[in-house]
Length: 315
Image (cartoon, rainbow, N blue to C red):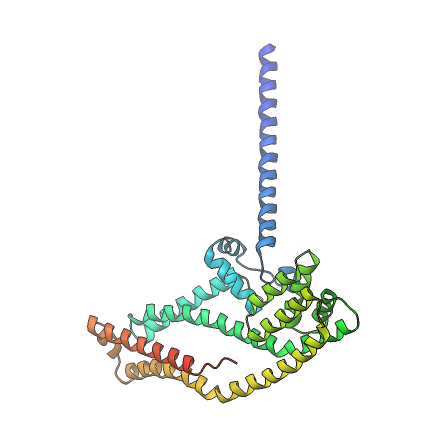
């Protein structure tokens, strides 16, 4: 009888231990998921899922990628471009592009051009981010006169500068509206005006924005005439906007030339291989031919960079 009771107690203790183990594992998994969600929300600076309603892909990869230096750099770049894409999604798309270009270059030209085409895919992805960032900055610069005008009218009506920034964020379209919303949110949680505007200038660097930020910060510190300073700044920004448009129009042909030079070089390779099938494979079959190809690509890259440098005019 005592043995039977001991067996029952042992089974009950084992069953209780299993139940507690299951509950503990479940609690640990739920806590780990909540912690990962909290870290994801606190460290994420890109587009939010709730704002767009679009289902995000590659969440695990995205979370792990943003813990690395490359992921953090990529996240800052994507945040500056305003694209509705996460670092993980962009990274997977870039890898797919690199693989596709590798296979196309290897099949259409020669096996030696596969890795070169893959590197070209990485360069194209980085250039795409830079182009989107410059485009967003240009659009923001174009809205700066309207920003200064709204802030001047709001402060003249007796509103505080923080309230005026929130009003401008509601009235303006993207990208100015989105960026001013971030500034208004930072001011709402206790950040100083200097820090909030300084982060805005870091996200969208431009001389015009630096002038506006400096004017607002100095006027807020010294208590000067914000309205008159913003009125004068609005006229200056309008003039700079017209000047930048004229310069961009004058240099459009030079810009197209900088892109046409490497395109002609790649087109010459396809033409050479089309005239005589297998010519590139035989040419790159020796170290001398491979060296000549690399030197040619290097010269095309140097020409592209020099044309872009010589045609750059900072206003």
